[in-house]
Amino acid sequence: MENAVELDEIKNLWAESNRNLEASMRLNSILMQQSNLRKTETSLQSLARSIALEVIVNVIGVVLIGVFISSNLNEPRFIVPAALIDIYFIALIVAGARQLAELRGIDYDEPVVAIQTRLERLRLRRIWTTLATLLFAPLMWVPFMIVGLRAVFGADAYAGGAAWLAGNVLFGLAVIPVAIFLARRYGSRLAASKPMRALADSIAGHSLKSAMDSLDSIRRFEEC
Image 1 (spheres, one colour):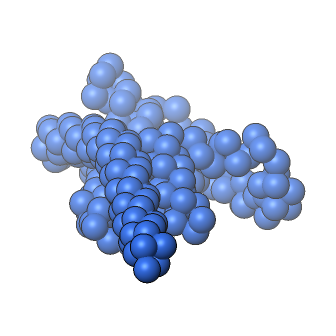
Image 2 (cartoon, helix red, strand yellow; image 1 turned 180 degrees about the vertical axis):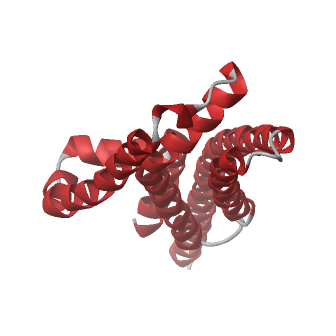
């Protein structure tokens, strides 16, 4: 009888030990998730500040272009390129605002997979925004030149002649299909290389990459 009592006590102690171990493991899991989520939140806050700075710079650009337009209301030839630049800045502001809204929409109480989905969507949005910015840059430099020469030096870029301006515009137009061709022809091959993956991470932002790495560590831990 005494042996049976001792055996029951041992079983109870073993069961209690198992419960304590499971509770400890759950606590460690929660603490690890909280630590990684804090790192993720810190990285995303840094990214948000960077995007906000981009938006502020573009807003300043819109204001300056507005001042330029108001100073040249009687000269449509300067207003048209200024309006194109204004549209360009406004498009960048809208893109930045959408990214900030995506960041603000992240709920750290959501499942990790849901957060990763949001981050991937944000990453792709930033990549497309950057590529679109670079794609239209060859076209925008002519309006920038016209407005810049007029605003800073009071010079008239149209004095170079219509043929000169047309040549610059055509050059910008020619760059776009060439860039698209190169991307389609060599993009898949280059994308498989580590340098191109690193470039993609840079385009998306190092802060975002760090955030995704932290979340990925949580996912791997949950799968164990």
